Image 1 (cartoon, rainbow, N blue to C red):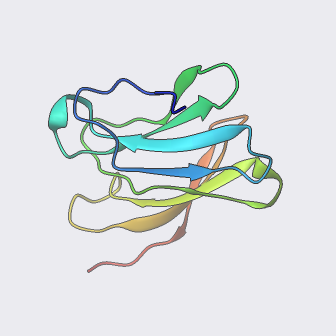
Image 2 (cartoon, rainbow, N blue to C red; image 1 turned 30 degrees about the vertical axis):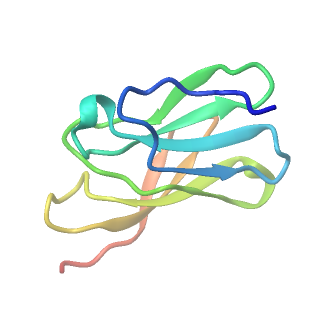
Length: 103
């Protein structure tokens, strides 16, 4: 039997399961804006928390790093015209660009 875990009006654009299978990274565009944001969903409790939220930017489905403590994703918060690759620590929220180039 399938169980619905998210309730975004416009649905989700992608998911990725952590290696320990406890957390699901979800991308969704609230209100259908196509500015996809990243959320972390606890697979056991259903608790959904924003992980990367910037309503003026768009982000891709993240990949979990080794140990599931970091995620890697692309987005355009530094420049609306350019998508860079970022690393974000899930405990502290600290984010840094690991690859960025114009174009």
